[in-house]
Image 1 (cartoon, rainbow, N blue to C red):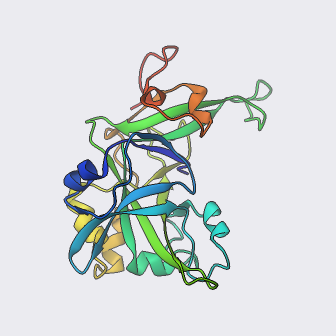
Image 2: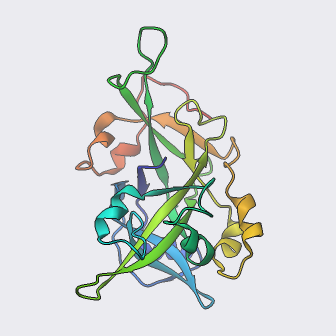
Amino acid sequence: MCGRFAQPRSSDELARLFRARPVTDLAGDRFNVAPTDEVAAVVEHHGDRQLDVFRWGLVPVYAESPKQGARLINARAETVETSPAYRTAFRRWRCIIPADAFYEWRRDPAAQGGRRSRGGRSEPFAVRRVDGDPMAFAGLWAVWRDPGTAARLFSCTIITTAANTALATIHPRMPVILEPNDWQRWLDDTTPIAELRPLLAPAPGDLLEAYAVSPAVNSVRNNGPELLDPITRWTEPIR
């Protein structure tokens, strides 16, 4: 899964990098984005690529309240075509969610029998592109209307797939990461589903690196560039 990520770049910089028109002034310097936070995402409307703001955690159009979105921060690539919560968005409302890094937690095996323990200590890792460019998460978005006020809520989710061999030692899932040549195909709502399926694959193992970071990232109250600093007791990143 992907439960936290870093989106530190300004809206203007993200719009430039993703060749989009900014329609939000969402602040940058966000190093510990958590579910239900606002995030910047790239969408396309009638050929106009825009960078706009969405709440992280997709609220389906049929939801009774926005609370359902807190559980829908990730959509599994294996079921995104058939899941009632995501299938319409997969056909019609796709987006790109930029991120400089995402965080995953590796749980230590318990001492007895090598089994993983629910009470065991978890070690946070940051995962980022080796080349330093922002990642482009494949995402979905939707609009929910409050039945009482008719107010609209724009929300999004990140599609995940099986982890590549480099990251599987940390967590069995990872976000789907799109390469620039695939951005237009993903955003275009006329792209046939058959052309989208191959994009939902794990990123190549040499694209990313993972390294241990401070447990300070565990708390959503902490937010700063130091969260992405490597800690010294691991000397080599995982690639």
